[in-house]
Image (tube, rainbow, N blue to C red):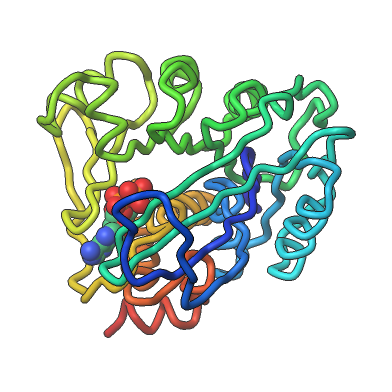
Length: 295
Ligand code: ADP
């Protein structure tokens, strides 16, 4: 069983021909509302891949928050520890995607949602094998990463670009810090992957790694850079590829795989998702993934 901690939001997706050159009104060809947020997408991935998963998160007490929770429950994510914070608003975004797949995103996050996580349980549920934390609710992630450290269970930090301070603060607490390439570049101040991983390693006793899009996954082990190549696919939409990778990676660790096996499993899940349109809508089931990996 995996515990995910972090953000759950609602994405409003508009498909348009092209971006206007100046502010004007544009009619969209299509519109969809779909849940998002790194921790929430990872939780849905774990559920789709047949894992038991709980999400600890907070939303506003608006109708949007109720909808976000209902969608997660439909995917069989345990939502009993998602709090609807009184008087606050749920995070939302407007995502405009043009015919070339370029995205223009406007996101709103209610700062007041960044509340004290003292209402969260003070101990991990007993049957948790791995935790996965994003950096968008740092106080909660810190609390849960410390609990995992004390219980000696693996923890995955999704070290993304949105919160440098949180990455710095949390990296030393996680057994596995998984960077996106831009986040590693920002932390280390270098484009060099090996140099970046070494700079990250100086901040933690855990395993540091980076996802590299079509170039796969790399990590440091006993001072050496190791790699798992990406699965060769025709990518049609990479939306949420990173979130799918993190969720599948945490599930594989929970099932007892070492970093290499977990990286391969997660790379396959993320690659398969990249062959399909949509974020959550493209997440494969375990059966589909097993078939893909043995092809
Ligand atoms: P993010 O979405 O956070 O930017 P990446 O682009 O690094 O993350 O993608 C995460 C993972 O998804 C990669 O490590 C890889 O396993 C898989 N992936 C992404 N793009 C491709 C691609 N074009 N072909 C195969 N696998 C891909």
